[in-house]
Image 1 (cartoon, rainbow, N blue to C red):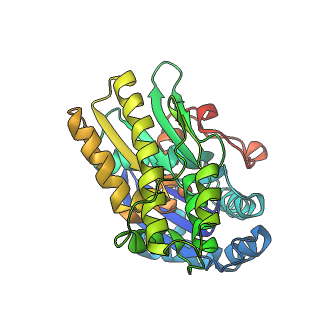
Image 2 (cartoon, rainbow, N blue to C red; image 1 turned 60 degrees about the vertical axis):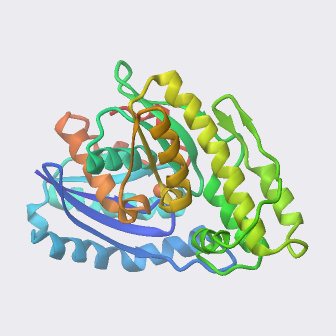
Length: 322
Ligand code: FE2
């Protein structure tokens, strides 16, 4: 079985092809974000313009012909409605043309699953950190889905870092620019909000943004990173001990940050747990993670009739059965 997966929840249109768990292709086109941020209708137009090319590139990379594809997966959500629609329609038209099974996939679940797969983890505690999401997750074997042990009360950490980058007048990509400037910063105390295994970033963002222009950008970048990452580490440490996990992984776009990975790795080591993260290619949005989960779901008989293949902008991971 060779499954083609399509990811289009935000700025990336990604197509991956997986055969029996082996990633044969992982191609993508990314919308260039400007200081205006992402306008969903514009990003969707970008996806429409690039969809065919990315599908063809993925087929070329895999060495397969289109009729060698025996299953299709796509991102159901969470994500931006117009962007999700492009992936959904591309996937449905391929499934109809090839007469193969199709399955909608939860985006966050796919981030965790590809990390587990690549790092060969058995049953990790997962910290999922991206633009719109920040959650601490553990798979519930009885319910066949992830439980959310902790999450942000307000905004995702990636969106917080992007907003900070804009208010400091930095150029995109804000996250990596903040990481670079933070290497030369000094600590300024900022609001720190953790409640059990939940956390919040809006107060931290407001305070840091008000200090823009009054404190050095390097100091603000360093202090926001140290404060927000320490919040995530505290909550994840509590969850690690509570769940008695022997493995910890971080996934999603913000997992590419070396400082965050370093802090989480040090915390995991203190508790004798193994720490892992996937290469950056799989932490940024990608089609391979969707194909990987879709192959697993189709092999379990979880394919969905075309008429029920929808999208859901706020599709929570704890409602996605695997
Ligand atoms: Fe993502």
